Length: 188
Ligand SMILES: [Mg+2]
Image (cartoon, rainbow, N blue to C red; front, side):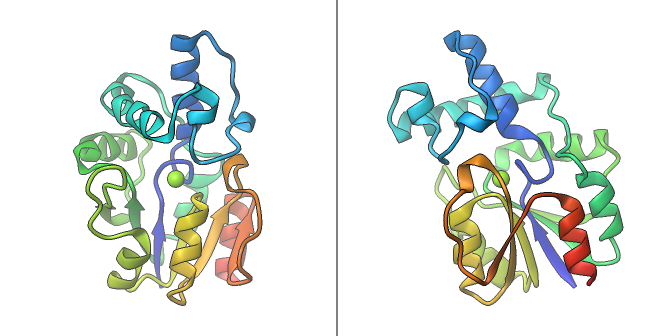
């Protein structure tokens, strides 16, 4: 089975680090629980476009900052490695080195491919299209829109439960609270 896995907030505990970074600059103390929508502009007091620019501006800075793996992610992907695993991320492809080094640092060598959709900058194919083109059978992401769109193509989707993806989901999507749950449901 071929499984597509998002990078940020599925493998790497990213949003927390992003929020902490701007807490220091803004003198705020937001926590991950405060990130109740995908657009962090409401936290930072700016429009969505400016908030996206902040996310883009953070990419070159992330190299010097420790971004831990999501709890249970490494154990889980090792349990799933008899499948073909690929990363499908919305990141810009300019972060390829960061992603590769992060995987090496955490001794993760189970992925056969990393695909960057460049979500913030001239995205040519959305994740749903990429999943279809790659003939992925299972897709795991924390972005509500991505899993909804991908599930419409008939691909089995798991939504990693996060403060920013609350709300109704189609019956074709399974909300999961941990990597253990994903492994259990895939291996069922
Ligand atoms: Mg993500």
